[in-house]
Every structure is written in C-alpha cells, then in structure tokens.
Length: 380
Ligand code: COS
Image (cartoon, rainbow, N blue to C red; front, top):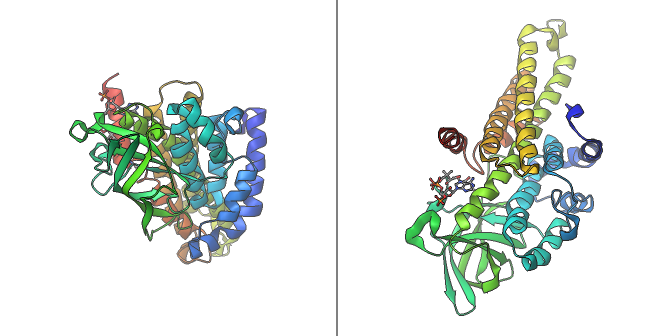
C-alpha cells in the first residue's frame, strides 16, 4: 500500500526497513533469550533520528509526521516487537505529553535530549488498583513550599529501568477522581525516585517493565505538566496517541508472521509438494494478509487524522483493537503453519506469538478499546 505514502514517507520506510533487516533481525532472537535491554541498538536508532520522529526540529525532533512514526514502529517491530515498544513508549507516552502540554520552558529543557535519544522516557500511570480504571490512582502529590512531594508506587512501567525522565500521574485532589489528578515531570536522579521490581514477562522480553517507587520524592513546582487537576485528560489524550504506536507495533508482528509463513510454506515439502500448494494453508495466508491490510488501513487512518489535528480517540482505539487482534491471529497461524518447528525457538513465530499478546493488553485492553469506541459512537 506504498502508493498511499508520500515520497518522504517512502524514503523513511526504505531506510528503516533496511536498518531493521541488517541490524535488528540478527540480534532479535538473542535479545529475547537474554532479556537484555538493547542499549546499543537504541543508540543506533537515535542516530537515525527515530527517537523523536513526529516532533518539530526546533525541539530536537525529526520534523516528520505521525504516518512516518507508524511506518518506523512497524518496521522495527517486524523483527523485534520489544524494541518497537521501547521506541513507542518513549515517543508517544513521554515526549508527546511534554510536547502537547508542556510550557515552552519545559519543551526546551526536556525535548531535545529525549528526541535525540540521549535520554529515555517512561510514563507512570498504572498502579496495582488503577489499571483499566486509570482514575483510581492513589499516588499522591502534595505542594510543600515550592516543591511537589510525590508518594506512591507505579506498576508495569515500560522503559522504567532505563528512563531518565518519567511522566508521573498523581492524585492532587483524591476525592475528585479523574478531576483530581495532575501530571508531573520527574527526573530519575531526584531523591525518593527509585526502581522497584522488574517484571518477568511472557514476551517483549528485551524491553524492561518495572515498578517505580516514589518516597517523599520532592520535585520543583515548575515540573507540574499541564494544569492542576487536569492530568487525567493529559493521560487520556496521551494514550490516544500511544494506541496508534501500539497498533503499529502489532502490525509489525503480523507482518513478520505473514512473511515468515509465506517463506516456510513455499519451502516445506509434505506429501511430495510445498505446503503452500494445499488449500488449507493458502486460505490461512489469504486471511492473514487481508486482516493485516484492514488493520494497516485503520492505523494509517488514525495517524492521518492525528496529523490533520482532528479528534481521533475512536479511530486510535479501533486501530489498536483491530491490529492487536490481527497480530495475535497472524502469529498463532504462523506457529500453526510452521507445525512442530513453529513451537520451537529455532524459528521466530513462537516469539511473535508471545509478543503479540501484550498488544491486546497495554495502553488499554481490547475491552477498554471497545468501551472507548462504543462511548464515542453512542454520543455522536
Ligand atoms: N481525550 C480527552 N478527554 C478524555 C478522553 C480522551 N480520549 N477520554 C476521557 N476524557 C475525559 C472525559 O471527557 C471526562 O472529562 P470531564 O471530567 O470534563 O467530564 C474525563 O476525561 C473522564 O472521562 P470518563 O468519565 O470517560 O473516565 P472513566 O474513569 O470512566 O474512564 C476510560 C474512561 C475507561 C476510557 C479510561 O479510564 C481508560 O482509557 N482506561 C484505560 C487506561 C489505560 O489505557 N491504561 C494503560 C496504562 S498506560 S500504558
């Protein structure tokens, strides 16, 4: 579907796909095995300008659009979904709220280091009792003199262990729920900010997922991000964008599943002919490709609407819902097509299968995406 892309987007696609093939593919399986954060790879992606794709050059970004961002995340995730989410969580969940809600001073202070990849970002919203019910955050922020003092524990935070900058959501008026939450920018060296338990996960193993513990963590008053008590909207608007990134990650997983399946089906001979000649396999491949293209169009549309500054909450939810379901479907079929080999670590589909599952969970479960879509169509 390259005909839908501009010349600039096509050039970026070619560049990132080549990089992913040359540099990511050879190490992805090993990274999954060792569960090590790919520091060197992130540095290389930073050098290519891929840590701040959709932000203006004046803030250190690459000055591209959100379709370019989708293209890059998909191409990276084609070979390594863990690397895809590292870039996506950094870009969509940390840089984006600073860009959208930060003061000019905050943007100038934080964005150049983040967009260049010199610093890594994370987003601290979830807590043990505040998952889908994001307004239930208990982490507190109290103003003491000219400092905000934060206390609480954040859970399942992508990039937490490597992040230099965290966007933290805390209750500033607890009884008001979604109308009593404020966002803050917290630097990792602040006393009282520390990393807790690292999660052992089913997939995306090379990305880190950890607790962030805040104990009397005092930050300057000017690190409040956006308006007082308006942090829930900061979180929701940020997640709308993040969901496009996860949809793109899911597309990458689906693409890998399809490409590997086509190659294997042409090569694997049973009953005297390649299994690609059997109708059962052909129909799997046809369905995988059709589903992938439907998900791609939904994701492309959501990114286009974001670029055109239209409201796109519903479209981002649809893109993530569809793309994540398609990723799981394609990965599962890829394992099936590879038969016994698909169940082993000698081939990649088992990794795609494990990696696909999280796309239906983080940045809003599939059930929450349905809720967002339904509430949007019901109020139309
Ligand atoms: N953009 C702007 N504003 C939004 C919004 C969006 N996408 N979604 C909600 N809001 C606003 C509402 O308009 C409402 O504003 P007012 O206070 O002015 O009326 C406010 O936010 C509260 O909205 P709502 O009543 O719908 O909030 P709920 O507590 O019912 O929660 C869902 C809504 C379920 C959609 C939300 O909690 C959610 O997305 N949960 C999933 C969280 C998630 O994705 N977590 C992943 C962790 S981050 S990796």
